[in-house]
Image (cartoon, rainbow, N blue to C red; front, side):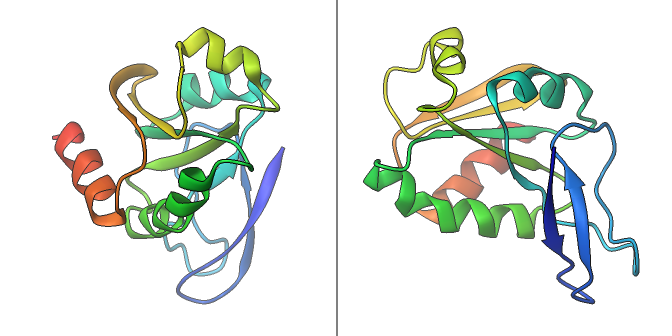
Length: 140
């Protein structure tokens, strides 16, 4: 599965796969692309295992107000940290097995992985700048 991302530099539309090992780059100008994709339960494990970049997993639901509130901040983060971090959104209503496996008891929950290993977890919404600070601090 893949999603279409417009290049922030030249506006070329590029397909970005959910599962891949590399860094997504624009086919036209080679700029690093923001990596913000929706993953199903079956796609999450391979996305984490094959990623050469750290992955921020956002566990959310469409009925969750705080989840909707942080969505623009995560989109901004994906753009600002393009080529550095991948953002993968998992709808817990569509993938309850992921919530159970990760022990998620409240949403939004953001889990940061590096090398396929969980390195940090944030339960609850944060303002956009605080999300970025948390990610950058944990990746040092």
